[in-house]
Picture 1 (cartoon, rainbow, N blue to C red):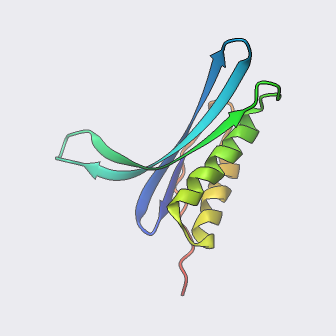
Picture 2 (picture 1 turned 60 degrees about the vertical axis):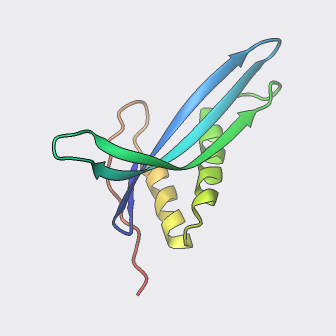
Length: 114
C-alpha cells in the first residue's frame, strides 16, 4: 500500500506469522517505510523503516487477519505522531485497498490545511 503525505511517499506492508508449540500463536506486523528514492541513478530505491506495529493473537483467540492488520496499523500510526487529517488519509487508503492479491497501488495525498 502506498500513501503520499506532504510530498513524502510511505509504503505500508503487513506480515503474518504463525508460531507452533504447545499452542498455535499468531502475530501480525505492520511496517511503514519512507521511500527515500534511489541513491544513484539506475540503483535500487532506498527506503527507511519509520514505524512498526505488532498485534499478537492469544493462543486461545480465533485468528482474524483483518483484525490483526487493523491493530498493527493503528499501533504503527501512533509512532508517527501525525495530524488527524494525515492519519485519516492512511485509514482511507487502507480501506480502499484491493483484496485477494489483486492489490493496485494508488497514491493518495493528504488534504492540505489552509
